[in-house]
Length: 117
Image (cartoon, rainbow, N blue to C red; front, side, top):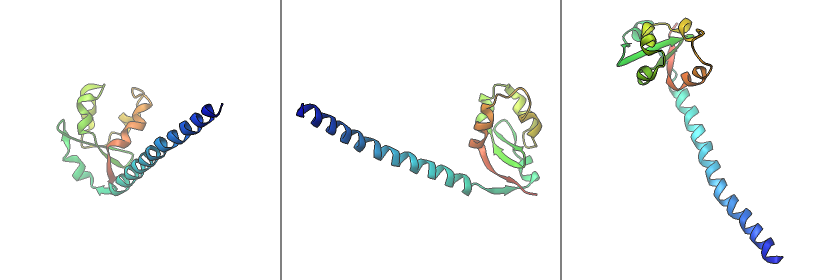
């Protein structure tokens, strides 16, 4: 009986020692991600964005926010449709019925700043 109790206590302690460092690492990662997003808050003019209008350099504007989607162009399920508004406002197309709701979560990964007013 004593062996079972000691084994349980050691198991709980070992579990705590393993989980606490992992929780700290994941919290630190979230802080770094939120800090990098706030640091990325740069402003771009419409003219600056318009220069990024090709497959190898593709920025889009969605609701006054600027996104560098160059790395996503080849993966875009709609093919070259993403290039129709490269370097321009893609708000209407982005919120079209062809997009699954997951794109609304994905787009934040490509955020680089705001459109200058």
